[in-house]
Length: 69
Image 1 (cartoon, rainbow, N blue to C red):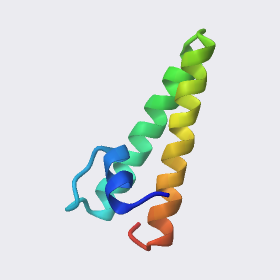
Image 2: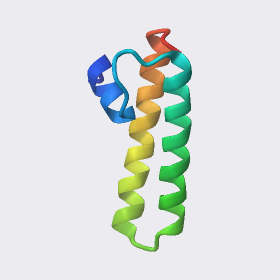
Image 3: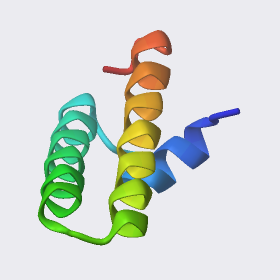
Image 4: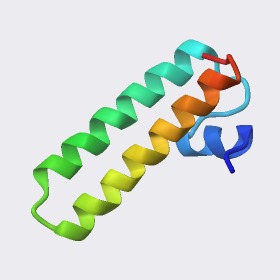
């Protein structure tokens, strides 16, 4: 179960983060994770970063439902 604290921790932000900061951080991490996943040949690394992308999407959905973004 995602909480505010865990979602902000995943994004590496503090509680005072604005909607714009949350979205910017989400998009930046999503891009970084996709780039790492696509550039590596190691299956474990690809799967790890795919899981990180899923986790980011869960955070996005959480904040959307909470109407924070």
